[in-house]
Length: 452
Image (cartoon, rainbow, N blue to C red; front, side, top):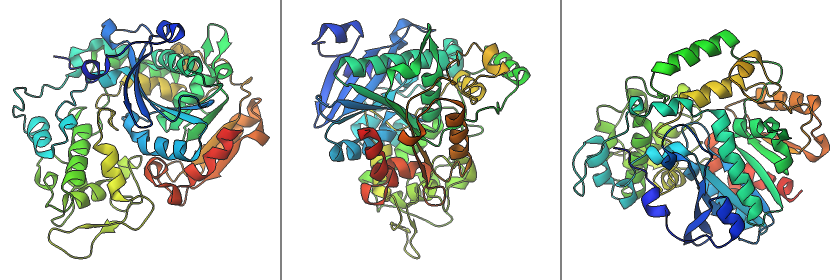
């Protein structure tokens, strides 16, 4: 059974403007400066009920500038929540839109939404009934249409978000994100939408650790074809943890975050759960908060999960269970708050392999044989002429800003209006999203660029 996690709670309310109705934009909930929206997505493979995009908007309705943030791989809109709130609190004429793609509707987050960590553990990891229901995660082979959820469909959806921001009053719309979200943003800018370059919809790009590598395609046409052939009969979703289903990392992280937020100093519940990979388990008994810190801190996080990393502190020198000590860029409580939140959770349980394939082929925004074989319409890199803000962390070390410079040289991007910030020796990717303003060089510097 497919449980569309937002449809039941978000499909209420009425469209108040004819232009918004034409875009399928429906306002639904309001909580302080945050508004949840459901947009009609582009027609895609699979049942029409998946043709939806989920957006959370922060900041005043009257703001003239909008920044649309796209999630990185295996992330959700909730990963950008704290950063969005920090930005709109210091930039009064800014809206921030955070985006969840259509595959988020496959997630059953109903018990996470209760805020009860014990119920969540029993339901998702113990497969015990809660509230008369039992957890039935979606098996990838049961949704074969997701094999076609690639870059073209994602960009068609993103264009609807960009148009919605304009319709709702934003005169200047910026697009960006971290990692894969930054890659998709670059691809949008150089994409050909029936003869119209995507960059004409935008005032600029905000890129954090993108993979843009002009002139250096990473996969060959032969390799792309082989991966496409394997995908035709395979599971449509990427697997992050070997031997575990696609949804497992998201469930582990949100369960751990919920315990860390609700019962931070109690002995860790997840530490003794047998399916948590050994690399994430501390060598001593720890608290719930320390278990989360050990899993995501740059000092102990596995190298293969460098994208899920913060400078959060360290295990205390003593104690049983051992607590966590803050003291670096990102307090562990902000990590817990981010990954325990609902309804816009910070993870994506299901991430399409076809999108990964397309993004690998599109690393060179000038196009490549692999991109052409896959039908990717990357046709406007040479004429790209909007300002770019680039922020580099230790995840991309020095290659991101180098390659961004090559892109600028080969295009018409106004270099004097663009900004490059190098924090490769000081910040991890998630520090950009989760660190508070006093220790976050991204929120300190991006405002000037957005003001233009």
